[in-house]
Each structure stands twice: as structure tokens, then as C-alpha cells.
Image 1 (cartoon, rainbow, N blue to C red):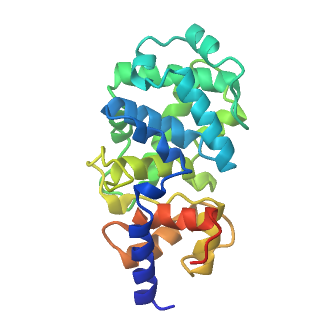
Image 2 (image 1 turned 90 degrees about the horizontal axis):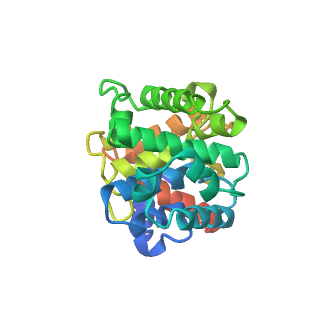
Image 3 (image 1 turned 135 degrees about the vertical axis):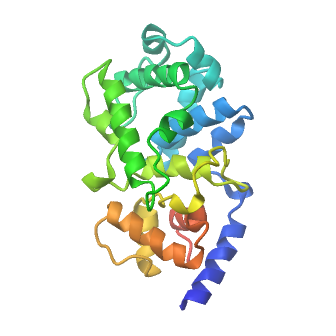
Length: 260
């Protein structure tokens, strides 16, 4: 398949996988809301829990959204750790302990109290001169871990929540959140229009890695940040302005075990 054929097929799947094909995906949850803050909070939480089996992801996100009465911003306004321990009692997920979740929501409350939004905190890290958002993600993760450390010891789960690109992680979940916030189409919200779409890095998981190898979008064998950058660069040759737009379709083709 040459570049022209690949682009035609990718564009076809991009159009095919619209909002009617959203389920099952953690992106379902922020789409339940209309308010900016509810969307941003729900999207952040949904991305943080977006790893592992999709059925388990949907189940834990249903449980968390139900526990906060499907009112993310309202819940944060009156949040404290005592309320958190009561709300999230016996709620945990793979690497994340109940206390990790309790502290995460405390830090989120502080972010909205002190910065006004997650976007404002992230933009403090964003450098427009960078080739992509590698340094911004590193800065943001360091800030989040530092804030988490104010309330608890840094667990394996917290490190997993906020990884660094230079420590070889693909940073899939923060890249997923950024895709949702920066891009604007039927699926993504486009609430953070200060960041150009071509600065984004594709969120790489096993599905994206496998299909990208098959399509010769990457020669990397190890799933890491270098692979994410290489796949993004290959897609940038097909769409210099919006290379990450193909992410949802590629991921779901892999998840649904479809032939490309």
C-alpha cells in the first residue's frame, strides 16, 4: 500500500468512526455533559482510568461517575478528603488504590480553586516553541506528582498516573486526554484551542502499536515514547495539520479485531 492509498483508507475510516461508533470507549463519559468544567473533569478522570480491559474501564468509570452523582464540578466544589474516603470507599482499580483516588480528587479540587481549570495549569507548562508537547507533559506530570505528594506517599499507582516521556512511557493516557481537549470534531471537544493540533502525540497502546507496525507507521519494536513520536511523524506526512485525528479509528479497528 503506497502513501496515497494509505491516506485514502485512513480518511475513510476516520469518517466511518464517528460519534455513532463511540461505544465502548472512555470518551463516552465526558460526552454526557455540556458544561466546560464537567467535560474537562470527566475527561481527565476518564483518561486516567483508560488502561486494561475495556469492559473493566467502562465499569470503573460508571462506578466513579455514579459515586460523584454525575456532577463532576459540583462534587469538587465541596470536596475534602473525609468526603473522599466516604465516597470512594472500596473503589480501586488495578494499580490505583482507594487512597490514590481520594488524593487525586483532592488535588483536582486544589487545581480548580487555585488555577481555575486543568487547562490553565497545563498551559503554564506548555512551550509554543517546542517541536511537540513532550516537555509540557513532563512538566505537568512533575507538578501533579508534587501536588499528590503533599497528601500521601508516592505509590506505584500515582507514578503510573503521571509518567514521564523520557522514562520511556508512551504517556498514553495524558496524550488521550490532550487529544480530546485540543482537537475538535464529532468525537473530540476542542476546548483547549491554544495548542495547535500538530503538536499532539498519538496515544499509543497495544492496539495502536500492533496496527501501526502492520501499516509500516513505525519500525520500533518496543512500545515507548519513541514509538509514539515515530507513529505521529508518519501520520504527519499524511496530514501535517491534524495527524492524530486517525487515533480513534485505528484504536477501534484493533479493539474490534477488524481487517484494515
